[in-house]
Amino acid sequence: MVHFNKILIILVIMLFTGFSVFGQSKTTVNENTGGPNPAAIGVDTAQQNLKEVSVSKFEDAGFWTVEMDRDAGVTTLRRLPGGPLDRKPIPDEEKLGLSGDDKFVLGVKVQFYRRGNVSFFIRPERPLPVEGITKTLSMWVVGRNTPHTLKVLLSDQFGHKAVITVGKLNFTGWKKMVVAIPTTIVQRDYHYMNRQGIMIEGFEIDCDPAETYGSYFIYFDDLRAVTDLFSEETRDVDDMMDNW
Image (tube, rainbow, N blue to C red):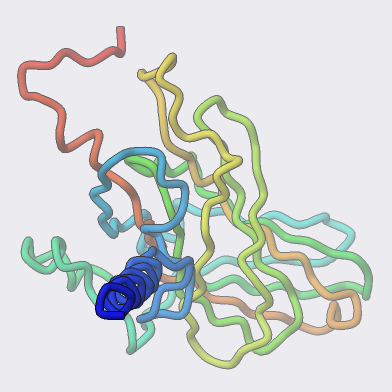
């Protein structure tokens, strides 16, 4: 009887230990932001060194262009002072004294000619590279509470184009919108180490046909990426670069 009780106690301990280990597994949701958890996306190395980096602060309106079919309406792009009050500086930038450089936002105005299936595009003068293996992208947006849809235009390691849906713009005021980079987008191939990561080609806004009349305004600020820099920061100082 004593021997049976010992076995029962051991089984109970093993059961609770199993539940504890299971509970420590990485979740796909970030508990702080409610968005995707970068640490659980596309884990293909034994270790990760995740860092949040700034991709664009939209300070220079001359670096961006807006495009739309000429028979659909007229577009205007402008730099305006302001920004979201809830935006938090990146710790590394704050240490270097660069956190105060974000004083402007990018504003886009669209004046529709008629209702219909309309899309407009906001593109940089040249694609924006992101160092490392990107896990998530985030941007602050004022959507003016419309059912239009925001998408990000990307190109992968080999230049293949991709479109990722960020979400609806049916909210008021500034909102931090976060999107995970699917693992189907190739960012690293050990046979081609001279090029890796993604390039941000711009944004696409697909308009709801019922809302394509009058004028529409949208604002952008603080485009960031959470990226894995483990391979870059663990390279030996005497190791050659395979870029020749």
